[in-house]
Length: 583
Image (cartoon, rainbow, N blue to C red):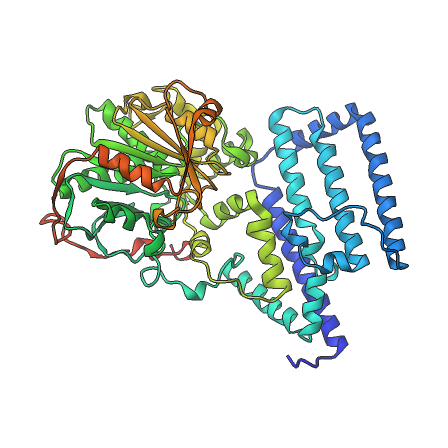
Protein backbone atom coordinates (compact mmCIF):
# COMPACT_ATOMS: atom_id res chain seq x y z
CA UNK A 1 0.00 0.00 0.00
CA UNK A 2 1.17 3.51 -0.82
CA UNK A 3 2.35 5.30 2.32
CA UNK A 4 0.37 8.28 1.15
CA UNK A 5 -2.92 6.40 1.34
CA UNK A 6 -5.96 8.63 1.67
CA UNK A 7 -7.74 9.02 5.03
CA UNK A 8 -10.73 7.25 3.45
CA UNK A 9 -8.68 4.16 2.59
CA UNK A 10 -7.20 4.10 6.08
CA UNK A 11 -10.71 4.49 7.50
CA UNK A 12 -11.89 1.52 5.47
CA UNK A 13 -8.96 -0.56 6.66
CA UNK A 14 -9.70 0.40 10.27
CA UNK A 15 -13.31 -0.67 9.79
CA UNK A 16 -12.33 -3.93 8.08
CA UNK A 17 -9.73 -4.72 10.72
CA UNK A 18 -12.15 -3.94 13.52
CA UNK A 19 -14.85 -6.18 12.04
CA UNK A 20 -12.37 -9.02 11.44
CA UNK A 21 -11.02 -8.69 14.97
CA UNK A 22 -14.55 -8.67 16.41
CA UNK A 23 -15.26 -11.97 14.64
CA UNK A 24 -12.00 -13.46 15.91
CA UNK A 25 -12.81 -12.42 19.48
CA UNK A 26 -16.34 -13.83 19.25
CA UNK A 27 -14.99 -17.15 18.00
CA UNK A 28 -12.28 -17.28 20.67
CA UNK A 29 -14.84 -16.51 23.37
CA UNK A 30 -16.99 -19.38 22.13
CA UNK A 31 -14.01 -21.73 22.42
CA UNK A 32 -12.85 -20.40 25.78
CA UNK A 33 -16.16 -19.97 27.55
CA UNK A 34 -18.32 -22.75 26.14
CA UNK A 35 -16.48 -26.08 26.15
CA UNK A 36 -18.85 -28.81 25.03
CA UNK A 37 -20.23 -31.00 27.78
CA UNK A 38 -20.20 -28.58 30.69
CA UNK A 39 -23.50 -28.25 32.56
CA UNK A 40 -24.34 -24.56 32.13
CA UNK A 41 -27.99 -24.39 33.22
CA UNK A 42 -27.26 -25.47 36.78
CA UNK A 43 -24.14 -23.30 36.83
CA UNK A 44 -26.06 -20.13 35.95
CA UNK A 45 -28.94 -21.00 38.28
CA UNK A 46 -26.57 -21.35 41.22
CA UNK A 47 -25.00 -17.97 40.45
CA UNK A 48 -28.39 -16.25 40.16
CA UNK A 49 -29.55 -17.68 43.48
CA UNK A 50 -26.33 -16.60 45.20
CA UNK A 51 -26.65 -13.08 43.78
CA UNK A 52 -30.25 -12.81 45.04
CA UNK A 53 -29.15 -13.80 48.54
CA UNK A 54 -26.39 -11.17 48.46
CA UNK A 55 -28.38 -8.20 47.20
CA UNK A 56 -27.14 -5.82 49.90
CA UNK A 57 -23.49 -6.32 49.09
CA UNK A 58 -24.20 -5.89 45.39
CA UNK A 59 -25.86 -2.54 46.08
CA UNK A 60 -22.84 -1.33 48.04
CA UNK A 61 -20.46 -2.41 45.27
CA UNK A 62 -22.67 -0.72 42.68
CA UNK A 63 -22.64 2.56 44.62
CA UNK A 64 -18.86 2.44 44.99
CA UNK A 65 -18.48 1.64 41.30
CA UNK A 66 -20.71 4.50 40.14
CA UNK A 67 -18.91 6.91 42.44
CA UNK A 68 -15.52 5.84 41.07
CA UNK A 69 -16.72 6.12 37.46
CA UNK A 70 -18.16 9.59 38.14
CA UNK A 71 -14.88 10.73 39.70
CA UNK A 72 -12.99 9.36 36.70
CA UNK A 73 -15.31 11.12 34.23
CA UNK A 74 -14.99 14.41 36.12
CA UNK A 75 -11.23 14.09 36.22
CA UNK A 76 -11.14 13.38 32.47
CA UNK A 77 -13.12 16.55 31.74
CA UNK A 78 -10.70 18.52 33.93
CA UNK A 79 -7.71 17.06 32.08
CA UNK A 80 -9.29 17.90 28.75
CA UNK A 81 -9.68 21.47 30.02
CA UNK A 82 -5.98 21.63 30.93
CA UNK A 83 -5.88 20.57 34.57
CA UNK A 84 -2.59 19.05 35.85
CA UNK A 85 -4.10 16.92 38.66
CA UNK A 86 -3.32 13.26 39.22
CA UNK A 87 -5.30 10.52 37.46
CA UNK A 88 -8.12 8.90 39.41
CA UNK A 89 -6.62 5.43 38.97
CA UNK A 90 -3.05 4.61 38.05
CA UNK A 91 -2.22 1.89 35.56
CA UNK A 92 -1.42 -1.52 36.97
CA UNK A 93 2.41 -1.68 36.65
CA UNK A 94 2.51 -5.35 35.65
CA UNK A 95 -0.20 -4.99 32.99
CA UNK A 96 1.74 -4.88 29.75
CA UNK A 97 -1.41 -4.18 27.72
CA UNK A 98 -1.34 -0.54 28.87
CA UNK A 99 2.40 0.04 29.21
CA UNK A 100 2.78 2.40 26.22
CA UNK A 101 2.78 6.11 27.15
CA UNK A 102 -0.12 6.83 24.76
CA UNK A 103 -2.49 5.15 27.21
CA UNK A 104 -1.72 7.78 29.86
CA UNK A 105 -0.86 10.85 27.81
CA UNK A 106 -4.09 11.11 25.84
CA UNK A 107 -7.07 11.98 28.13
CA UNK A 108 -9.53 9.95 26.03
CA UNK A 109 -7.49 6.73 26.06
CA UNK A 110 -6.53 7.28 29.68
CA UNK A 111 -10.25 7.39 30.43
CA UNK A 112 -10.89 4.22 28.41
CA UNK A 113 -8.07 2.40 30.21
CA UNK A 114 -9.11 3.49 33.69
CA UNK A 115 -12.80 2.84 33.09
CA UNK A 116 -11.96 -0.69 31.95
CA UNK A 117 -9.81 -1.27 35.03
CA UNK A 118 -12.54 0.06 37.35
CA UNK A 119 -15.10 -2.19 35.69
CA UNK A 120 -12.79 -5.19 35.91
CA UNK A 121 -12.13 -4.59 39.61
CA UNK A 122 -15.85 -4.18 40.31
CA UNK A 123 -16.89 -7.32 38.46
CA UNK A 124 -14.19 -9.49 40.02
CA UNK A 125 -15.15 -8.26 43.50
CA UNK A 126 -18.80 -8.88 42.76
CA UNK A 127 -18.38 -12.49 41.65
CA UNK A 128 -15.61 -13.22 44.14
CA UNK A 129 -17.81 -12.46 47.14
CA UNK A 130 -20.76 -14.64 46.15
CA UNK A 131 -21.81 -17.44 48.48
CA UNK A 132 -20.97 -20.36 46.20
CA UNK A 133 -19.40 -23.76 46.54
CA UNK A 134 -15.70 -23.83 45.73
CA UNK A 135 -16.05 -25.49 42.32
CA UNK A 136 -18.67 -23.02 41.08
CA UNK A 137 -16.75 -20.03 42.48
CA UNK A 138 -13.55 -21.12 40.76
CA UNK A 139 -15.32 -21.60 37.43
CA UNK A 140 -17.18 -18.27 37.69
CA UNK A 141 -14.03 -16.32 38.52
CA UNK A 142 -12.15 -18.02 35.68
CA UNK A 143 -14.77 -17.25 33.03
CA UNK A 144 -15.16 -13.72 34.35
CA UNK A 145 -11.43 -13.17 33.82
CA UNK A 146 -11.70 -14.74 30.36
CA UNK A 147 -14.47 -12.31 29.44
CA UNK A 148 -12.63 -9.29 30.85
CA UNK A 149 -9.43 -10.25 29.04
CA UNK A 150 -11.34 -10.60 25.77
CA UNK A 151 -13.12 -7.23 25.95
CA UNK A 152 -10.03 -5.25 26.95
CA UNK A 153 -9.83 -1.98 24.96
CA UNK A 154 -6.35 -3.05 23.88
CA UNK A 155 -7.96 -5.76 21.72
CA UNK A 156 -9.88 -3.36 19.44
CA UNK A 157 -8.37 -0.97 16.90
CA UNK A 158 -10.66 1.97 17.69
CA UNK A 159 -9.73 1.95 21.41
CA UNK A 160 -6.03 1.12 21.20
CA UNK A 161 -3.91 4.28 20.74
CA UNK A 162 -0.80 2.28 19.84
CA UNK A 163 -2.65 0.60 16.99
CA UNK A 164 -4.11 3.87 15.68
CA UNK A 165 -0.76 5.67 15.84
CA UNK A 166 0.96 2.84 13.98
CA UNK A 167 -1.78 2.84 11.32
CA UNK A 168 -1.48 6.60 10.79
CA UNK A 169 2.31 6.52 10.72
CA UNK A 170 2.28 3.68 8.16
CA UNK A 171 -0.50 5.10 6.02
CA UNK A 172 -2.65 2.08 6.82
CA UNK A 173 0.00 -0.50 5.92
CA UNK A 174 -0.09 -1.98 9.42
CA UNK A 175 -3.80 -2.78 9.05
CA UNK A 176 -3.24 -4.28 5.61
CA UNK A 177 -0.48 -6.48 7.01
CA UNK A 178 -2.71 -7.42 9.95
CA UNK A 179 -5.49 -8.57 7.65
CA UNK A 180 -2.96 -10.65 5.72
CA UNK A 181 -1.74 -12.22 8.97
CA UNK A 182 -5.32 -12.92 9.98
CA UNK A 183 -6.10 -14.67 6.70
CA UNK A 184 -2.94 -16.78 7.06
CA UNK A 185 -3.85 -17.82 10.60
CA UNK A 186 -7.41 -18.65 9.57
CA UNK A 187 -5.95 -20.99 6.95
CA UNK A 188 -3.76 -22.63 9.63
CA UNK A 189 -6.59 -22.73 12.14
CA UNK A 190 -4.52 -21.24 14.96
CA UNK A 191 -2.87 -18.03 16.12
CA UNK A 192 0.78 -17.69 15.15
CA UNK A 193 2.95 -17.20 18.23
CA UNK A 194 6.30 -17.11 16.48
CA UNK A 195 7.83 -16.84 13.05
CA UNK A 196 7.51 -20.52 12.18
CA UNK A 197 9.54 -20.16 8.98
CA UNK A 198 12.72 -19.87 11.06
CA UNK A 199 12.51 -23.33 12.61
CA UNK A 200 12.67 -26.87 11.33
CA UNK A 201 12.75 -30.03 13.40
CA UNK A 202 16.06 -31.77 12.79
CA UNK A 203 17.71 -28.68 11.31
CA UNK A 204 17.95 -26.15 14.15
CA UNK A 205 15.85 -27.79 16.88
CA UNK A 206 15.93 -31.43 18.03
CA UNK A 207 19.43 -31.76 16.58
CA UNK A 208 21.25 -33.95 19.12
CA UNK A 209 22.80 -36.80 17.09
CA UNK A 210 21.20 -40.19 17.48
CA UNK A 211 19.14 -42.85 15.74
CA UNK A 212 15.72 -44.47 15.95
CA UNK A 213 16.48 -48.01 17.08
CA UNK A 214 12.94 -49.31 17.61
CA UNK A 215 9.42 -48.33 16.57
CA UNK A 216 5.88 -49.61 16.82
CA UNK A 217 2.41 -48.18 16.18
CA UNK A 218 2.68 -45.87 19.20
CA UNK A 219 6.24 -44.56 19.54
CA UNK A 220 9.76 -44.47 18.21
CA UNK A 221 12.68 -45.15 20.55
CA UNK A 222 15.62 -42.82 19.96
CA UNK A 223 19.11 -43.72 21.16
CA UNK A 224 21.51 -40.78 21.29
CA UNK A 225 25.19 -40.88 20.42
CA UNK A 226 27.39 -40.66 23.53
CA UNK A 227 29.41 -37.47 24.04
CA UNK A 228 31.84 -38.93 26.59
CA UNK A 229 34.46 -41.68 26.28
CA UNK A 230 32.98 -43.57 29.21
CA UNK A 231 29.31 -43.91 30.15
CA UNK A 232 27.26 -45.24 33.03
CA UNK A 233 26.48 -48.88 32.44
CA UNK A 234 22.75 -48.36 33.01
CA UNK A 235 20.89 -46.52 30.24
CA UNK A 236 18.66 -43.55 31.06
CA UNK A 237 15.20 -43.67 29.44
CA UNK A 238 13.37 -40.34 29.08
CA UNK A 239 9.57 -40.31 28.69
CA UNK A 240 8.19 -36.94 27.56
CA UNK A 241 4.49 -36.03 27.68
CA UNK A 242 2.38 -37.52 24.91
CA UNK A 243 0.37 -34.29 24.79
CA UNK A 244 3.35 -32.44 23.26
CA UNK A 245 6.29 -33.23 20.99
CA UNK A 246 9.35 -34.60 22.78
CA UNK A 247 11.76 -31.92 21.60
CA UNK A 248 10.98 -29.58 24.47
CA UNK A 249 13.74 -31.70 26.03
CA UNK A 250 16.05 -31.07 23.05
CA UNK A 251 15.28 -27.60 21.68
CA UNK A 252 18.84 -26.41 21.07
CA UNK A 253 22.22 -27.73 22.28
CA UNK A 254 22.60 -25.04 24.96
CA UNK A 255 19.25 -25.78 26.63
CA UNK A 256 18.84 -29.47 25.82
CA UNK A 257 18.18 -31.76 28.77
CA UNK A 258 19.10 -34.65 26.49
CA UNK A 259 22.50 -33.10 25.71
CA UNK A 260 23.07 -32.31 29.38
CA UNK A 261 22.47 -35.94 30.38
CA UNK A 262 24.78 -37.15 27.62
CA UNK A 263 27.53 -34.80 28.79
CA UNK A 264 27.14 -36.22 32.31
CA UNK A 265 28.03 -39.65 30.90
CA UNK A 266 24.59 -41.22 30.52
CA UNK A 267 23.43 -43.50 27.71
CA UNK A 268 20.24 -41.69 26.77
CA UNK A 269 17.16 -43.25 25.20
CA UNK A 270 13.99 -41.25 24.56
CA UNK A 271 10.38 -42.04 23.65
CA UNK A 272 9.07 -40.08 20.66
CA UNK A 273 5.28 -40.46 20.75
CA UNK A 274 3.29 -40.79 17.56
CA UNK A 275 1.01 -37.92 16.55
CA UNK A 276 -2.28 -39.79 16.53
CA UNK A 277 -4.17 -40.23 13.28
CA UNK A 278 -7.25 -42.20 12.32
CA UNK A 279 -5.43 -45.55 12.42
CA UNK A 280 -4.51 -45.07 16.09
CA UNK A 281 -7.75 -43.36 17.19
CA UNK A 282 -9.02 -46.31 19.25
CA UNK A 283 -5.92 -46.64 21.44
CA UNK A 284 -6.47 -46.68 25.20
CA UNK A 285 -4.57 -45.59 28.29
CA UNK A 286 -3.68 -49.25 28.85
CA UNK A 287 -2.15 -49.33 25.35
CA UNK A 288 0.08 -46.41 26.29
CA UNK A 289 1.20 -48.36 29.36
CA UNK A 290 1.65 -51.78 27.74
CA UNK A 291 2.68 -50.97 24.16
CA UNK A 292 4.32 -47.70 25.04
CA UNK A 293 6.14 -47.44 28.36
CA UNK A 294 6.65 -51.12 29.16
CA UNK A 295 7.94 -51.91 25.67
CA UNK A 296 10.27 -48.88 25.79
CA UNK A 297 11.65 -50.05 29.15
CA UNK A 298 12.28 -53.52 27.75
CA UNK A 299 13.91 -52.37 24.52
CA UNK A 300 16.19 -49.80 26.21
CA UNK A 301 17.34 -52.44 28.70
CA UNK A 302 17.94 -54.96 25.93
CA UNK A 303 20.06 -52.57 23.87
CA UNK A 304 21.88 -51.44 27.01
CA UNK A 305 22.53 -55.09 27.98
CA UNK A 306 21.33 -54.57 31.52
CA UNK A 307 18.44 -55.74 33.68
CA UNK A 308 17.71 -52.32 35.18
CA UNK A 309 17.80 -48.81 33.80
CA UNK A 310 17.42 -45.25 35.08
CA UNK A 311 14.08 -43.67 34.18
CA UNK A 312 12.73 -40.14 33.80
CA UNK A 313 9.20 -38.92 33.10
CA UNK A 314 8.00 -35.39 32.36
CA UNK A 315 4.42 -34.24 33.10
CA UNK A 316 1.91 -36.84 31.86
CA UNK A 317 4.91 -38.87 30.69
CA UNK A 318 5.81 -39.17 34.36
CA UNK A 319 2.27 -40.28 35.22
CA UNK A 320 2.42 -42.99 32.56
CA UNK A 321 5.91 -44.06 33.63
CA UNK A 322 5.00 -44.36 37.32
CA UNK A 323 1.88 -46.37 36.52
CA UNK A 324 3.85 -48.69 34.24
CA UNK A 325 6.45 -49.29 36.96
CA UNK A 326 3.65 -50.03 39.44
CA UNK A 327 2.10 -52.52 37.00
CA UNK A 328 5.45 -54.24 36.52
CA UNK A 329 6.05 -54.32 40.28
CA UNK A 330 2.74 -56.13 40.73
CA UNK A 331 3.93 -58.61 38.11
CA UNK A 332 7.17 -59.17 40.03
CA UNK A 333 9.43 -57.04 37.83
CA UNK A 334 11.62 -54.09 38.82
CA UNK A 335 13.16 -52.62 35.65
CA UNK A 336 13.89 -49.17 37.13
CA UNK A 337 16.93 -48.61 39.32
CA UNK A 338 15.96 -44.95 39.75
CA UNK A 339 12.93 -42.81 38.91
CA UNK A 340 12.99 -39.10 38.10
CA UNK A 341 9.68 -37.25 37.85
CA UNK A 342 9.53 -33.70 36.47
CA UNK A 343 6.37 -31.64 37.13
CA UNK A 344 4.25 -34.77 37.37
CA UNK A 345 0.84 -35.41 38.90
CA UNK A 346 0.06 -38.71 40.62
CA UNK A 347 -2.30 -37.14 43.14
CA UNK A 348 -4.91 -35.12 41.18
CA UNK A 349 -6.68 -33.54 44.15
CA UNK A 350 -5.65 -30.01 43.08
CA UNK A 351 -4.84 -29.55 39.40
CA UNK A 352 -5.13 -25.77 39.26
CA UNK A 353 -7.41 -23.82 36.94
CA UNK A 354 -7.63 -26.57 34.32
CA UNK A 355 -10.24 -27.99 36.71
CA UNK A 356 -12.78 -25.45 35.42
CA UNK A 357 -13.08 -27.43 32.19
CA UNK A 358 -13.65 -30.77 33.89
CA UNK A 359 -16.85 -31.89 35.56
CA UNK A 360 -19.05 -34.99 35.43
CA UNK A 361 -21.08 -33.74 32.46
CA UNK A 362 -17.99 -32.81 30.45
CA UNK A 363 -16.27 -36.14 31.10
CA UNK A 364 -19.41 -38.17 30.43
CA UNK A 365 -19.88 -36.36 27.12
CA UNK A 366 -16.31 -37.21 26.12
CA UNK A 367 -16.84 -40.85 27.04
CA UNK A 368 -19.91 -40.97 24.81
CA UNK A 369 -18.15 -39.11 22.01
CA UNK A 370 -15.12 -41.41 21.99
CA UNK A 371 -16.78 -44.71 22.89
CA UNK A 372 -15.93 -46.11 19.45
CA UNK A 373 -12.70 -44.16 18.99
CA UNK A 374 -11.87 -40.72 17.70
CA UNK A 375 -9.18 -38.07 17.71
CA UNK A 376 -8.75 -35.36 20.34
CA UNK A 377 -7.34 -32.41 18.44
CA UNK A 378 -3.99 -31.16 19.64
CA UNK A 379 -5.14 -27.70 18.59
CA UNK A 380 -8.08 -27.86 21.04
CA UNK A 381 -5.84 -29.09 23.85
CA UNK A 382 -3.38 -26.28 23.14
CA UNK A 383 -6.18 -23.69 23.23
CA UNK A 384 -7.38 -25.02 26.59
CA UNK A 385 -3.93 -24.70 28.15
CA UNK A 386 -3.29 -21.31 26.52
CA UNK A 387 -6.55 -20.02 28.00
CA UNK A 388 -5.07 -20.43 31.47
CA UNK A 389 -2.78 -17.52 30.55
CA UNK A 390 -4.91 -15.89 27.89
CA UNK A 391 -3.39 -12.41 27.97
CA UNK A 392 0.09 -13.80 27.37
CA UNK A 393 -0.74 -16.68 25.03
CA UNK A 394 -3.79 -15.46 23.10
CA UNK A 395 -4.68 -11.77 23.21
CA UNK A 396 -1.15 -10.38 23.00
CA UNK A 397 -0.78 -12.18 19.66
CA UNK A 398 -4.19 -11.02 18.42
CA UNK A 399 -3.04 -7.42 19.00
CA UNK A 400 0.48 -7.91 17.65
CA UNK A 401 -0.42 -9.98 14.58
CA UNK A 402 -3.78 -8.59 13.46
CA UNK A 403 -4.03 -5.05 14.81
CA UNK A 404 -0.40 -4.01 14.51
CA UNK A 405 0.36 -6.18 11.48
CA UNK A 406 3.60 -7.50 12.89
CA UNK A 407 5.18 -10.91 12.53
CA UNK A 408 5.93 -12.52 15.91
CA UNK A 409 9.58 -12.77 16.87
CA UNK A 410 11.21 -16.19 16.29
CA UNK A 411 11.25 -18.17 19.54
CA UNK A 412 11.90 -21.91 19.58
CA UNK A 413 9.84 -22.52 22.73
CA UNK A 414 6.75 -20.97 21.14
CA UNK A 415 7.35 -22.95 17.94
CA UNK A 416 7.24 -26.11 20.06
CA UNK A 417 4.13 -24.83 21.85
CA UNK A 418 2.38 -24.42 18.48
CA UNK A 419 3.39 -27.90 17.29
CA UNK A 420 0.44 -29.64 18.92
CA UNK A 421 -0.10 -33.39 19.28
CA UNK A 422 -3.36 -35.29 18.83
CA UNK A 423 -4.49 -37.92 21.33
CA UNK A 424 -6.72 -40.96 20.85
CA UNK A 425 -10.20 -40.28 22.22
CA UNK A 426 -10.58 -43.40 24.41
CA UNK A 427 -7.20 -42.78 26.03
CA UNK A 428 -8.10 -39.14 26.75
CA UNK A 429 -11.55 -39.95 28.14
CA UNK A 430 -10.09 -42.58 30.50
CA UNK A 431 -7.42 -40.12 31.63
CA UNK A 432 -9.78 -37.29 32.57
CA UNK A 433 -12.29 -39.67 34.22
CA UNK A 434 -10.02 -41.84 36.35
CA UNK A 435 -7.30 -39.34 37.21
CA UNK A 436 -8.54 -35.76 36.92
CA UNK A 437 -12.15 -36.31 37.95
CA UNK A 438 -12.04 -39.29 40.33
CA UNK A 439 -8.36 -39.16 41.44
CA UNK A 440 -8.21 -42.95 41.70
CA UNK A 441 -4.44 -43.26 41.49
CA UNK A 442 -4.07 -42.25 45.14
CA UNK A 443 -5.94 -45.43 46.18
CA UNK A 444 -3.81 -48.59 45.88
CA UNK A 445 -5.53 -51.04 43.57
CA UNK A 446 -8.39 -48.72 42.59
CA UNK A 447 -7.10 -48.71 39.01
CA UNK A 448 -6.31 -51.82 37.00
CA UNK A 449 -4.34 -52.02 33.77
CA UNK A 450 -5.29 -55.21 31.92
CA UNK A 451 -6.37 -56.84 35.18
CA UNK A 452 -3.20 -55.76 37.01
CA UNK A 453 -3.87 -53.46 40.02
CA UNK A 454 -1.84 -50.26 40.24
CA UNK A 455 -0.24 -49.56 43.62
CA UNK A 456 2.32 -46.75 43.57
CA UNK A 457 3.72 -47.77 46.96
CA UNK A 458 5.25 -50.80 45.22
CA UNK A 459 7.65 -48.50 43.36
CA UNK A 460 10.51 -48.81 45.83
CA UNK A 461 13.46 -47.53 43.82
CA UNK A 462 14.97 -44.14 44.81
CA UNK A 463 13.00 -41.23 43.29
CA UNK A 464 14.01 -37.67 42.44
CA UNK A 465 10.89 -35.48 42.14
CA UNK A 466 11.06 -31.97 40.69
CA UNK A 467 8.27 -29.36 40.78
CA UNK A 468 8.13 -25.73 39.66
CA UNK A 469 6.89 -23.10 42.08
CA UNK A 470 4.83 -21.02 39.58
CA UNK A 471 3.55 -24.02 37.61
CA UNK A 472 -0.09 -23.41 36.53
CA UNK A 473 -0.52 -26.92 35.10
CA UNK A 474 1.02 -29.04 37.88
CA UNK A 475 0.72 -27.05 41.13
CA UNK A 476 3.85 -27.69 43.12
CA UNK A 477 2.07 -28.64 46.35
CA UNK A 478 0.15 -31.33 44.48
CA UNK A 479 3.39 -32.57 42.93
CA UNK A 480 4.80 -32.71 46.47
CA UNK A 481 1.83 -34.78 47.67
CA UNK A 482 2.22 -36.98 44.59
CA UNK A 483 5.79 -37.81 45.59
CA UNK A 484 4.49 -39.10 48.92
CA UNK A 485 2.58 -41.85 47.13
CA UNK A 486 5.80 -43.59 46.07
CA UNK A 487 7.16 -46.44 48.13
CA UNK A 488 10.88 -45.65 48.01
CA UNK A 489 13.23 -42.94 49.24
CA UNK A 490 12.25 -39.55 47.76
CA UNK A 491 14.41 -36.51 47.06
CA UNK A 492 12.19 -33.49 46.38
CA UNK A 493 13.49 -30.34 44.68
CA UNK A 494 11.46 -27.21 43.95
CA UNK A 495 12.54 -24.87 41.16
CA UNK A 496 11.63 -21.27 40.44
CA UNK A 497 9.40 -20.24 37.52
CA UNK A 498 6.74 -22.25 35.69
CA UNK A 499 5.93 -25.55 34.03
CA UNK A 500 8.37 -25.17 31.11
CA UNK A 501 10.79 -22.38 32.04
CA UNK A 502 11.32 -23.89 35.49
CA UNK A 503 11.93 -27.37 34.11
CA UNK A 504 14.04 -26.55 31.06
CA UNK A 505 16.55 -24.45 32.98
CA UNK A 506 20.08 -25.24 31.74
CA UNK A 507 22.74 -25.59 34.41
CA UNK A 508 25.25 -23.77 32.20
CA UNK A 509 23.23 -20.53 32.30
CA UNK A 510 23.04 -20.49 36.12
CA UNK A 511 19.62 -18.81 36.12
CA UNK A 512 16.91 -18.76 38.78
CA UNK A 513 17.18 -20.84 41.93
CA UNK A 514 15.90 -24.02 43.52
CA UNK A 515 15.03 -25.30 47.00
CA UNK A 516 16.09 -28.54 48.66
CA UNK A 517 15.25 -30.11 52.00
CA UNK A 518 14.37 -33.31 53.83
CA UNK A 519 11.19 -34.72 52.32
CA UNK A 520 10.09 -37.35 54.80
CA UNK A 521 7.05 -36.76 56.99
CA UNK A 522 6.34 -33.16 55.99
CA UNK A 523 3.53 -31.16 54.46
CA UNK A 524 4.35 -29.04 51.43
CA UNK A 525 4.37 -25.63 53.13
CA UNK A 526 6.28 -27.02 56.11
CA UNK A 527 8.87 -28.44 53.71
CA UNK A 528 9.26 -25.10 51.94
CA UNK A 529 9.64 -23.22 55.22
CA UNK A 530 12.44 -25.57 56.31
CA UNK A 531 14.12 -25.91 52.92
CA UNK A 532 17.26 -24.18 51.68
CA UNK A 533 17.46 -21.99 48.60
CA UNK A 534 20.31 -22.44 46.14
CA UNK A 535 21.21 -20.34 43.09
CA UNK A 536 21.09 -21.89 39.64
CA UNK A 537 19.36 -24.80 37.98
CA UNK A 538 17.91 -27.92 39.57
CA UNK A 539 19.77 -29.87 36.88
CA UNK A 540 22.89 -29.66 39.06
CA UNK A 541 21.53 -31.51 42.14
CA UNK A 542 19.75 -33.95 39.82
CA UNK A 543 23.05 -34.85 38.11
CA UNK A 544 24.69 -35.30 41.52
CA UNK A 545 21.79 -37.50 42.69
CA UNK A 546 22.06 -39.72 39.61
CA UNK A 547 25.80 -40.00 40.11
CA UNK A 548 25.30 -41.03 43.74
CA UNK A 549 22.94 -43.77 42.55
CA UNK A 550 25.17 -44.58 39.60
CA UNK A 551 25.96 -47.95 38.14
CA UNK A 552 29.68 -47.64 37.44
CA UNK A 553 31.08 -46.66 34.08
CA UNK A 554 32.08 -48.57 30.98
CA UNK A 555 33.63 -47.64 27.66
CA UNK A 556 31.04 -45.99 25.42
CA UNK A 557 30.00 -48.02 22.41
CA UNK A 558 30.41 -46.23 19.09
CA UNK A 559 27.57 -48.00 17.28
CA UNK A 560 23.96 -47.31 18.17
CA UNK A 561 21.46 -50.12 18.55
CA UNK A 562 22.55 -53.75 18.26
CA UNK A 563 22.07 -56.75 16.01
CA UNK A 564 18.36 -56.98 16.92
CA UNK A 565 17.90 -53.21 16.83
CA UNK A 566 19.72 -51.79 13.81
CA UNK A 567 19.22 -48.03 13.33
CA UNK A 568 16.01 -47.39 11.39
CA UNK A 569 16.67 -43.73 10.64
CA UNK A 570 18.58 -40.78 12.06
CA UNK A 571 17.15 -38.80 14.97
CA UNK A 572 14.78 -37.05 15.36
CA UNK A 573 12.86 -39.62 13.30
CA UNK A 574 9.61 -39.49 11.35
CA UNK A 575 7.04 -39.48 14.15
CA UNK A 576 8.04 -36.12 15.60
CA UNK A 577 7.87 -34.40 12.22
CA UNK A 578 4.17 -35.15 11.69
CA UNK A 579 2.00 -32.15 12.49
CA UNK A 580 -1.50 -32.60 13.91
CA UNK A 581 -3.27 -31.53 10.75
CA UNK A 582 -1.26 -34.11 8.76
CA UNK A 583 -1.66 -37.07 11.13
